[in-house]
Length: 293
DNA sequence: GACATTTGACCACG
DNA sequence: CGTGGTCAAATGTC
Image 1 (cartoon, rainbow, N blue to C red):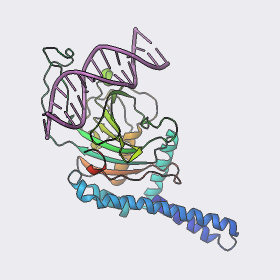
Image 2: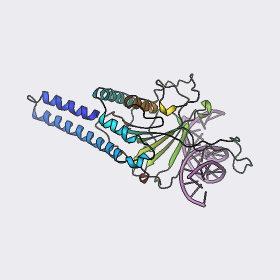
Image 3: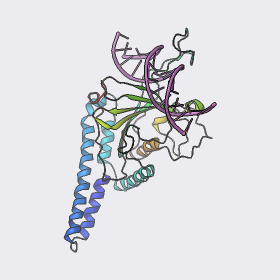
């Protein structure tokens, strides 16, 4: 939408200066307009792709389509301009090439298990098997993130949290291994946040990042929304001073603009528009055929 | 020495 | 029993 508005603005500018426009700059302006609308059309197609995948996604995310439609139908120019500015500021301050993120939030509705004691007991062969947590209850949030195209493209884009890698696993049907990270402050502040990073099969320059658990080692300027329904005792004294929580700030911003769906199910599409002339990323359908079995 | 990463093994779960 | 998530010893880095 913002790109369309931008294109319209260019058209108006051109229109007002048309009589005295020299042919060279006229050509430049037309090129710019054509490119802007072309890019907007490309993104529109992504959204339509999302809508068309309703059937597949509905099993998991009943609200996907409505939110996509909100994007398409209900955005107001004023808020779009604001959104544009917010995105631009946020992204430029980070200096990342992640141009396009799709956020998918879900709440695990599954049952929870009682975890027994014996945490941290011995290694293999011990008579008391160590406790292994599985099936983290709470929300799960999946984000498609463009990989850095310069430097080490193996590294997942920075999300302003410090993560410690604790595992890597070959995943059936995936060309690339899945990496497992947990919050660096897990021990210190009992922070339960974790994330998984997985390259997409058909686009090595895109990561699927799945966040689990919300950070309790951080302070948010705005109250986290559905993504942190029940945070466990935030630590007020922990102010790292290093920038804002980009990942969750994005969610908050999207919530503020679109409004959250019901508890636990909504989908926010984040277009990070640092430089609108670059968006090599294409939306990937979140279906099973895409990658994992 | 403290902390992060690697990696094979362990174990929960379907 | 296969798969995926986690553990923890070994190793690397600062």
